[in-house]
Length: 630
Image 1 (tube, rainbow, N blue to C red):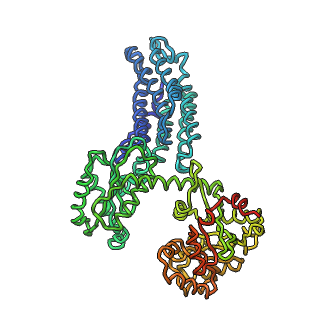
Image 2 (cartoon, rainbow, N blue to C red):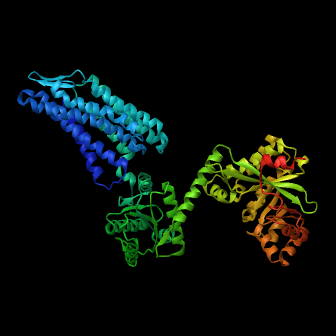
């Protein structure tokens, strides 16, 4: 006799989850579809489990054909549930169930074999048999455990292999718990098969993944009106290989100013009303809120975003009326034509956010059309960022050196340390393409410190006196210069390699010298460690003679732009500046010397050192050592 004491409450609890789940908007992604399949097959399995168990208990009151058929349906649903539970794991991981035809067959074969055996069981009694004496286990009954165990173990394997696709520890533990619960249910069913306990364990597993991944509110914003930024990234990642949509972004102008004017609560009420309005006028579109007053709408090729933006603009001419206030907002728009050539969600999102920032800064209401070139540029920046992350993590940032030439003797007297990284194909990426990315991503300190240490190692391993090199300049970015422990860290590296601080000059850009007080404290701390300073890129920033007089620079490097401008149209401004600098005790270095005419001009107006392609391009440290070794 079968016991129903567990299965009925399980069914009722599952109904509550289903009602709540379907009461809110759901994102069209693989994980959600598999979850719906999982819940559906579990409900079907519970209903059939109850019906078949009741028929087995009351077999004398029912036709044997009906009892046979109900048992066939139960085992068919049992095997199907095992497969769908396995597929759900892959839905959460965001990968295909099987990427090769062979793997697909390996996955599907146990399911198909069990279904065929189930189909034959009413005739041959393979898994079960029903006769005038009731229900009996067949010779192959334990196939339900073998099949279930196969898919659970495959799920464990998938979680282990693709665990990095799960965003955090909570998600990883949830997927492990999900499969552990299913495994426990299978084991308990094996020992207590007269009790309908397996469905209870399946419910527990569903509750775990519902709380961890499937709660619709996890993907919703503005009180459940539209999808959030997490849902947006999931949606793009899901459809990245078959994107054929149009995308329109909308930004509320001066978002933070609006929050100051109306207050956070009223502004959020207004955004909620805007989200509801967008859903109303674009019912077939997928609408996302991407923080800071930005909405992003996905629609198919038939959507006329020009007409839509005009309609939205017209609505914004009127106030958004809440219970306690009238809210006035202005909006701007940007559109992107999407195709399946885009490699990642980051490309789309970063490009759209840039476009919306541009729209917001101009207060424009005419839609800004994002071009393919802009998508390509964003994709290029993302690839550079990945290469930068790889280089920093693996300590493979390369040291290049460019000589500094004494203007009087024409011989090498120093060098400038420059950083280089390589792309995924091994090609060099120039600093102008990755330094600003390193600053934005917060990795500039690690990058700069690697170059500083590799410069120290180069000095330690090579005879600089024999090369004629008296010092090497190392750049400090403005963000590095703000680091309060900079002096101690760099001094520690000097001690590690037993390097005299006189051998390294620190180049500081004008941008670093905006805050006079901090500049004075930082330079004093570094000076006490023995460092000397060079003002880099003079002519592009904020320096003035009064500030230069206060700072202990030993040299001023003229930016390449003013050097080129002077060589094209000579005047008295640059020579007069150089004369003033030299009277103040500064040495002068000219960057960007590209030919003998520029070299002669810079010597003539009083530059002490010359640097540029005319003398040498930046060389890998090893090649530099070979080239200038006496």
